[in-house]
Length: 280
Figure 1 (cartoon, rainbow, N blue to C red):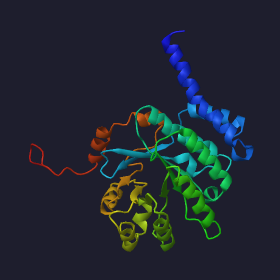
Figure 2 (figure 1 turned 180 degrees about the vertical axis):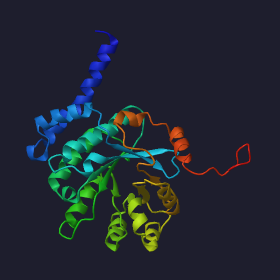
Figure 3 (figure 1 turned 90 degrees about the horizontal axis):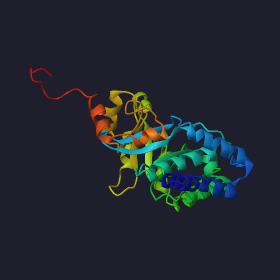
Figure 4 (figure 1 turned 135 degrees about the horizontal axis):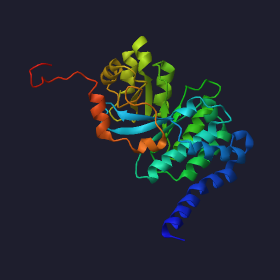
């Protein structure tokens, strides 16, 4: 056997090992991790679905993360299978030498379920990823009936080094209390909603009330040049949306060149300096 063949065999065996361990740890059929589901997962992974939305810093000069979009619309039976796919993608980037944090959205009812949290914890531990590369995107503030269970589940995940983000922030007092109480690392503001309904300035000021706050602001769903201007006004830390870059496959994410991104985004703004003919 040639050295190249041995290397391929070793890499393939190492990559497949986590899936067998996860199946043994939390393979209850109702959680969506049956043998058939795992086989479907592996074939789905090979198709390189266009499902990873790149996130950049506000100026577009640096790739800062990725939002795994399939989890936004996943059914309960798909949640853990897609969560595993998201973790596998972050691992793939990490093994390829790129430190690209992945934001994996999850509904609050799953975060309030000890069964789901147990399985998610097994998957995270089994991924062996460094602290800071995995973030949970909380899709809505939990109601009074599930708030305690959801908080307990999130704290368990945080102890594993997982970051916590609030998606779809609207500026309500309930959201602000939740963000402050949990000290969330990220808050995502939909810029298309901001265009139609101005977010209260006091809500934004409370998000940044302390320079030592761990919370960073993400300008989401940027589709117009005006959204970029609004993100600058908000002093957002990160930005993403169709105007920045459309979703890509996990392999395409590795090909993103920061300098090319900046050049493309800056070309959207009017030139401030005259050309050789003296025209602007």
